[in-house]
Length: 303
Image 1: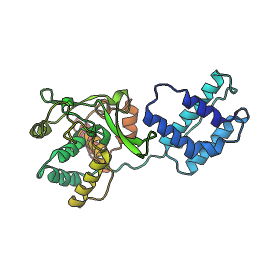
Image 2: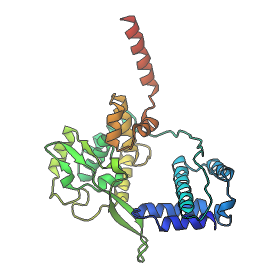
Image 3: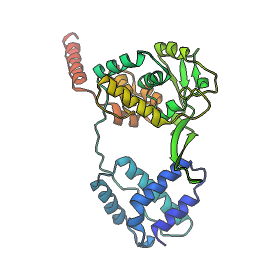
Image 4: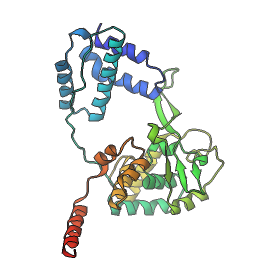
């Protein structure tokens, strides 16, 4: 029996797996695992086989997040195989990743002000939702999944209950379909404060509770439409092209710059722990470092 055989058995017997997760695993197996482990007996595999395999992925610039998902698939499958007496036990907990920190693009203060000026000009619900992302860090699928019942105007909060995603459709000739699913993780199901100025804007567009903000109906709103709208706004503002996720990065960066504590920011972003937030966003700018040094000098001088 090959590792690929065991992976397929593990995946087919994995209960309560979201359809989008199943499709993600299938894709990674087809792209990264199938050819590598198709013809090798699983009982001939050793830890060095996996170390060499992940070194190869790293040399091919496969992202750390993808590598970690692949490791999860392999480890879970091997545990399944061992539990069901399909293979010997193989310990691969010591696989190490060469973590390369990627530069995260954020809007500068000047770009953010330019963008906000355009968004509040002749504002509509799509512009309002872009502002909401910029001041709450919502993901594109999360903001597309918002219904008016999720906005608490008295408490001035928004609750994230669902996310809209486009996935492959295996049932008919349509290549993809839109689905609403639960948020990315348990911590992604969260309640976020909304700034006062945005509450006032949202009140102008309020509709029935069961209506989605962006579609203005009970139909799903395609995240790709909002991403395209964002791109057109950038062009109008003469801001360099960047991904929609830049709004989330910009929110987090501004939050750190304004001295929001990391625990609060982590909960607002829906991260499972503060280490994710620290790793992604707590990288002070040179100006912030300079101010910190000067504050230190002033503290010592005036002590």
